[in-house]
Image (cartoon, rainbow, N blue to C red):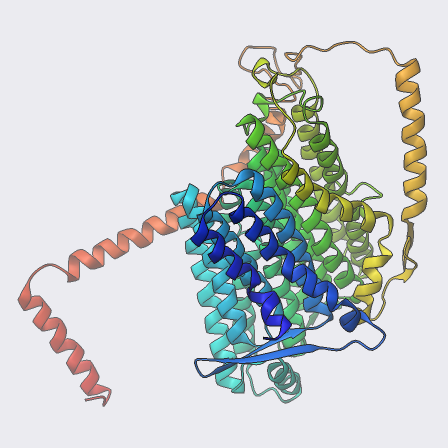
Amino acid sequence: MNELMIMLFAPLVAGFIAWALDVRGIREAVGVLGTLVPLGVLAKYYSTIAGSNPEVVTQTITVGGFKLIFQLNTISWYFATIASLIGVAMAFGMVSTSRSSYEWLFALMSYTGVLGVFLSGDFVGFFLFWELMTFASFMMVLKRSRHESLKYFVLSVIGAYAMLIAIGILYAKIGALDFGTIRQALYMDAMLGSISKSLTALVFLLFLTAFGVKAGAVPLHVWAPGAYSEVDQSYTAFFSGALSKAGAYGFLLLYILMGAKLVAALGIWHNHMVFSYIIAWLGAITVVVAGFLAVLQEDIRKLFAYSSVSQVGYILLGLGIGTPLGFTGALFHVLSHAVFKGLFWLVVAALVLRTGKTRFEDFGGLAEKMPITFAMSLIAVLSLAGIPPMAGFASKWLIYEAAISAHMPLVAGAIFLGSALAFAYVVRFLYAVWFGQRPSDLEDVKEAPLPLLIGMAILAIPNIVFGVAPGLVTEYLGKFLGNPVGGNYYKLVTPTGTYNALLVAVLLVFGLAIAGLIFIYGAKTRRIPVTNTYQSGNPVTEDYNLSMRRNFYRPLAEALDFWLKYSWDRFYERLAGIAEDFADFLREGFYNGNVQSYAWYLAVVLLILALWGVL
């Protein structure tokens, strides 16, 4: 069997074996091995894909009369490698946090699903693996929360049908399902115009819905906070770090397959492609809205769930800018978001495992008890907040440079605001969980288990390496984006600025050393009680008692009270209620148990068919 097929199905086979054997130790070993196989195959093909003469590795199989094409090229290798890296970290985490063969089966099934999405060269395979990925992740959510799984299921079904209708329209007009033929046909049609503008806009809207659901873009994000929170948090590292990238990959595929046709059909507005401008603002709104919602959370799982949504918004924003520099920043952020958010979820998994708690008010002073986990969380905090020299800063800097170069100041402002919001919520996480007075019931907390720490280290290292040497990523991305970023491994040069990551790293280490010496030998410290509060200008009352661990951003919530009255969750729930009431009305009206009524229904149907000439 071709190595692409081994890479693709190894996780799925390993999942079934782990589920069938269900023997502690063997189950975990098989699961970890199943995640390592794709990463090994991808490492083997690196020189073939990224060498001086890049090649495309192709494998074709026939299933049920459909020819499925799988390709490993520069783009699919990049996405598949990121997913595989997160998959290995997830597996090590699950060794410590999961005791269920059920979870191993569906976690590894979703791994195969996401690899299939990235490697598919036609819409048949793309849709089948998309649904496999969705089904497996749905089963993971279903195990712990029926309500959240239902919400995820409904939104996923809407996305799936939207994609299926769009694929059907393209097949009806082009007569092919492979990406190469579709791209060429739509490129030619951009000049000929045989596919109408309205139909093209419909296809764009359908794909926008399908990929927006999986990416968790506002307002299609409502499934994400609950789904990310109600699964094994080690799996959430993969759920948020890899599966959400399938949505981002879908948006990139839109450019590859339909870019020319969408420009011809939807036109240009203020020197920006209309369809990409829509994607950019979808990303900008997602960054800001989800960022504010993350700040207001009192549960660390919900905080990082909304944060995951917000950070994926940066990717959509970068893609929406529509320039090679924007693509570079967006694809760099695909990597940086995967490693820092995956790391965050493994840290959360360790906290839940060792303490059984998830709310800020129940934490405090854990840096002394879990020093390695604290160090890992600090790396994730710096990267997510966009503080150099971590990978998160490099990717956000490139997106910001792209927005400025494209003359999109409001979009650039969304990047800045999103980064400020990210800093606000990670600082609270850093202090409330790791510093301050430790509650008495956390005195016996132990460090995270070794396998979970290994999973964290797997993701912490890329945060540092690609932060100090961001040119490693931009050089690879330049192979298919035309090298929009200059410089070397340690320095990035764009038309509007220069970022020397190595110099910043050296200065930062030097500055921290001086600060440390001043703190050790010159600072006067005093203990602050855990009940020390601030009132933000409000009367000091028992009710209004604010601290870092309790209602810290309550004044912000009060300032945003008008906007917080409006909720997409409540909107969708009302919509569902209306649909349910209408369905009940139809059921009571038509299924009334009266045989005479059923006879009339049949007569009316037969009459309609006769008038249409069917009978």
